[in-house]
Image (cartoon, rainbow, N blue to C red; front, side, top):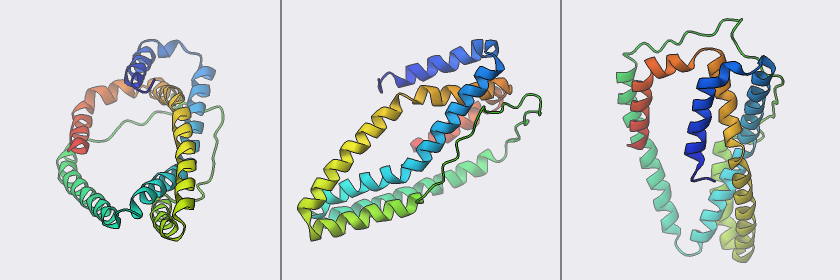
Length: 205
């Protein structure tokens, strides 16, 4: 399903653009609430996924080649520096455009049926450094235990990501319905296509 996901999302976007105005208001509010709930859940579990993935990587590499981990960290640092450097100059060029989007009026703004607010227990940066530190330390202290935990975490993360793959269409549909209801889609497509293209090119670079 993951390989078909771009086509599924494209089909959802086209359907909403063509027939979104036919949906009742309560249905729009329902789908928007579902999207916000999925977003809240993803933000909550993201630190765990970051920890588990980095723990697994460090466990698989630390006992064989600690220098590889340092090389990866250096590579990540250089990559972040270059992406920030590129985005700075791309941003300076983009800021010359009019980035003001007409906000929806109180009569067109879509209100969700409910809001699921789950507090974030651990920041992403803490999860990242914890995964690296705990993985390296436990690998040198008890390598067999570290490997067993890493394999278990890998199974849990794969199942979690696989499950959320099926919710991506609902997640995208809810926000697209909101944009369509508030009349923002055409504005974004008409006035910001060039900016989106530049952002995508900068990210790819």
